Amino acid sequence: MTAKKKYKDYESAIERLETITEQLEAGEATLEEAIGLYTEGLDIARFCNEKLEEAEKKIKIITEKSGLMVEEEFETDDEEDE
Image 1 (cartoon, rainbow, N blue to C red):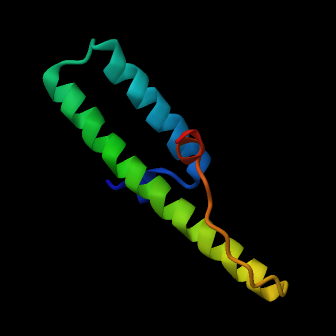
Image 2 (image 1 turned 90 degrees about the vertical axis):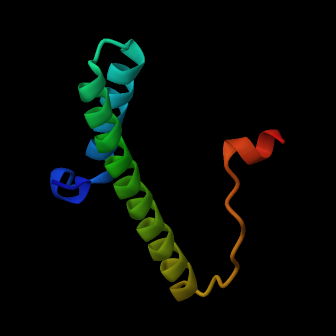
């Protein structure tokens, strides 16, 4: 089952991804369990990335409709630290 079917929204997907991260960092999972968790985490990360890209497109459309045709690069915290 893919992440798209499991998670109806970004928030619930991120919550599950945080749980998976905690489980993997604890180091208590067997190798097979860890591989399954890692694979699920990759699916969720892909799902979240798609959701973020969709949101970005919607924001651009709204901005264009509002007559604000200015597009600026979005800076992440990582880029500001450089």
